[in-house]
Image (cartoon, rainbow, N blue to C red):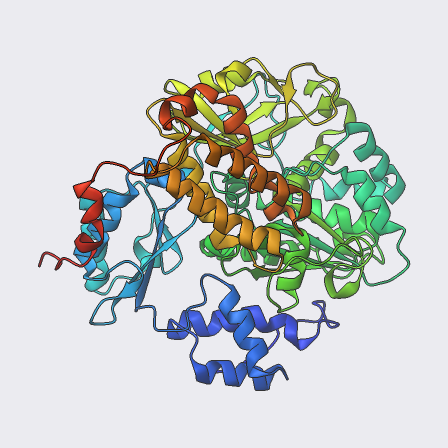
Length: 594
């Protein structure tokens, strides 16, 4: 197999060879359906690395298989929303249709069947990826039809479901920002009337902040990068939207790619960057072709390359890189390590990315929604933008909604909307607990239904912030089951570098399983809370710091639930014999129906 770094006369002449390692591993995975020992040795030679170094990278990512993964590789979503929507029945249907047990390949080598965390399709559950193409709203009949077509020689690309964006709500009276009418190139066409300083002033006046949940001031980040003397500089779009329950960036990538690219161009002009990279999550590989076509179109129109956007002396180009299944790569320094062809482990925070980011050079990292918002700001202008939202929180926010509601999908709301109004819009079914901003976010009860959704520091009484998603859980759901699903996710996705996160997530998962089985008591809850607080205080990156948020919140806000759900303190750990639970392991090994 030929291994090379993609390049053209504009594109990244300074990148070291190792930066192509992720792409090269993907070439083997896609063509051979796994990464063999021979492939590891070949890549080690090609990149002048040791076999152990390449093995370390390949083993880090979920979608790189070291054993044959089947001619058709099926990844079934096992996130909490998928589970609530019946993914267990779909798993059985796939096992019966393919003859493969979950976690293995069938005897013929045709089908590999594996579990995977959220695939960004929570509004289309149950869902799966087959050969990295999405199949949505699954039922037993549909599973059989899909498998039959694949057996007949159809490819996943020929038969996959193009997910509906489910754009459920936009602000009234044409007040949408992100989905307003736009003409490609209109935003960057206004750059010539601006200086970098005037763009920073616009960002400061509108108080646009990072839209991924950290809410860091965009103008401060860009200004800090602009002031760095080192060059060249990089603009990186973090499209690694891995938070379970979140899919808003998927919608933007699918329908608003030009806005994202224009936002990156504006950032490059402002900070003096030469190169841009879009880091796309592996679960969104099916969007690669569309995104690449948009990049090619921008080049053809002169919006990228030499004298980009018609500005003499402004040189900027963008390339696309695809991750391989790692939640922690959503953390910006882990993403940078991944782009450099390494394991996606968060860096020690000695320097900010704007100081020493990609290749230790000044780098701006923002997410898809942030870049789209900046492009629309330049398109519509300051006076129009600040008409949206409320004082202290101007503008709009995209929120992905899923779970126990009749209208799951994407909602663009103006900042300041009360929680209850959003729940009414999505037709939530008897909501009990809402998980805001994914498992790493916060849990709220209906006592907070009148709180207004605002940016942090807006000075609004009874307000809360939201990084991008609501998972709605009705009263029939067991909170312990939800927390166990979250804990299992964090245990699996922890990079394992720091002890608080590595050990803490393992212990939390085991303690929650203990409680779910009815052998724990309220003392275990307090121990769980202590572990969550310890991880928050001492973990190396955001994964460990936020993994216990839902535990702390639910223990504090749902005291009545836990008092009814758990035995009284002093429980001996002895429980009634449960025949169903006792034979569960046996059931896994029963012969499959022909």
